[in-house]
Image (cartoon, rainbow over all chains, first blue to last red; front, side, top):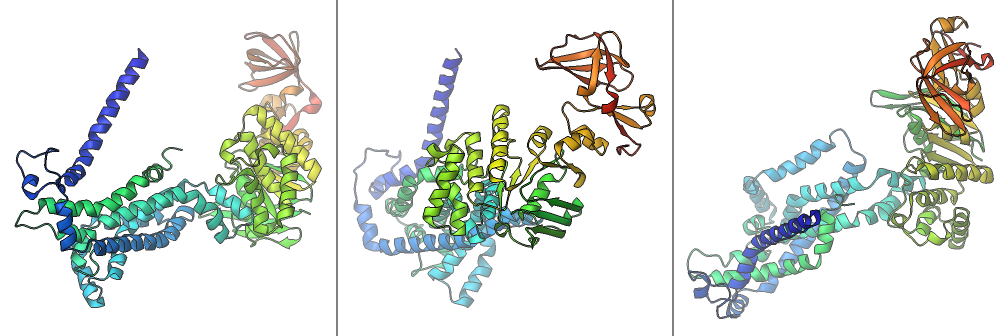
Length: 276
Length: 334
């Protein structure tokens, strides 16, 4: 009988997991579906699930009205550059905290995380003024730096956790084997931390891609990424639900596809250390 | 060549003094074992020699060169770690090649040395596997192989057998001893297991709280332990200690007698007690004896099979020439 109980429990777990998964995915699915409806069907009550007249009209209008590729390109540049810059800053930081910790290491880590506890709008005013002073408003450079800085605590934390999983004795063995600090980093630590570094890169790229608060407030035209592209379709007046959905679908499609292809790597990296 | 000299070496972590001033000489080709209970500073001492920790004061000389401030890589020492510390992302071949790659040894020479080490350590069939696909014993062999190919001035072993099961440990112990015979290179070996120390060492260094309690050959330590600590630590089962009247009769504060130096009889003897547990190993029989009025419990080792059972009265006579006497400070009385 023990076996039957296990099977039942497995079935129940699977069902619950599916329900939670579908609940989480539903808004995205609804957005995608809505993007193929007419504006009238999009706000129909009761809502129409699948039996509507499928149309590509919204996509055509969106593409006609705004230059999707330019927003996409900005998103790629902003997310990519801020991620690479973040990794370059975070690797040495996480390194020293994981392998040469001082008395204050824990405090510094907590302090870094505490910056994420402050609502972003709390520092909007000073950053906005800084941007005006430095002439960085609506520039990619300025936004790359801001995106890098806001995600830096998370990157450092993640890398710190991965590095901590690497036994210090292996690095000591490398030192005994004649490796310089550079050799140690290049041949031993980095290859061992690759799953962690890769998932950090991916996660940070996704976070930067979806960042809306700063991109909306600090850009207007030149540096505006896809989040600004979506926002331009949200309007208090008029019927724009279907077009907004089409824009949203176009904006999330690249990151969704990236996430889909890298999910193995992402899951492996995020559970690194938990399952050995 | 691998002569290592430590002069007035100290090590503190913050306010905690782990190694008080310590002097030690390790001769070329010697197999030296640091032994002591956990926390006695034996691993720290090894790491100081390796250069993985910096000395707080004092000097370390390797082959006449002052190595005190040299980085680990420059000391020409190879180390085998308790956790093996293999590079998990490299094959066995690459693991063994790594120190040679760092030293810029030419490829054909690398290959020759890898093949030699693999043959000596029975690893030839495993060269293209990764450490994760090997058993504990094989991993430890790879770690030793990685140490051998460097042709170091000395090998440092940090409890290399602790992670292996008992049977494998005995086998690897022999292999390491044979390796030492063949290479005749200095080996410094850290263990908490006094059996490893006794069986492998040319010279044992007994440590307690960072202090050297005694340095000597295994048999010197066994026969003439310089204090109570060494007497109790070396030898298995542990030496029996007796205080009080029985000790003062021999002009000592404490007398010590090893379990194997007590004759047993069912009729007469100097001391009498009751057997509480008897352990029959076939080759030997161990008795744990209570109620002697000398010590809470005494251990006796009789050769071969001896048939005392729980509750039996046992008579014991210590061999007078094998009695160890210690004064009030616990130091040996000659």
